[in-house]
Picture 1 (spheres, rainbow, N blue to C red):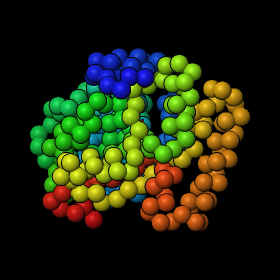
Picture 2: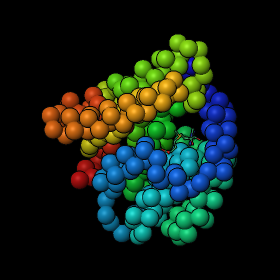
Picture 3: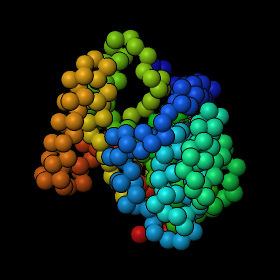
Picture 4: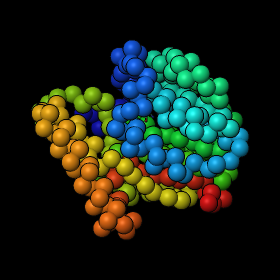
Length: 265
Ligand SMILES: C[S@@+](CC[C@H](N)C(=O)[O-])C[C@H]1O[C@@H](n2cnc3c(N)ncnc32)[C@H](O)[C@@H]1O
């Protein structure tokens, strides 16, 4: 795995990925564990106000943006991605959903076509980890976020089983499916917030056993082990590790940030 990657490589990896997914059954997108575990965590932060303008950045399949559009029918949701195969995928998804409060646009996170101060909510799930200039991406999202708007950004947690999975892939000289992928510690994410003059309003996370499930390529036993770990960690976290510090260690995805001038809530 290379440490530095250029955008053409990223586009190639994801372009091919979404092309392979083109024949997916749309219903199954909403029953995958990553989505089932993640979506409710994001949803609880979405403000329940009329006419919320939402941008889903690097939407991939578009399932998160679509679910937001479903759950917040008064919102206007734009699904966006840089690669054409994702845009094609999402156009079919939107048609399949018959929802009318969604649009699909091809957009580059480093250079959006939207004006300044345009969106109330920018949602960006597991995208910046694949980019070489993650801080520049945050800065461009901040430009199009309204003052007081909310930016939800997530990335994989460095202190998670997933890092062991990636190490094993590296040691066995296999190619990692997504090629380049950075992992974030709590302070890495916090630095991005501070560097871009944003205000951290909340942190959260989900799916601690993600990396264990991925080891199922070695043996199906890991799928079972993943389920077991997921189950017990959830109990453990909710019962014994309620402090913010301890919770963070077990989280895979986190970071909820807002623009600095107005506290969102
Ligand atoms: C891991 S997928 C995330 C998909 C989706 N957000 C989700 O959570 O299911 C990363 C996505 O980021 C997109 N991406 C990569 N570079 C981008 C860029 N410069 N601008 C916009 N999207 C980009 C890729 O095409 C890919 O669809």
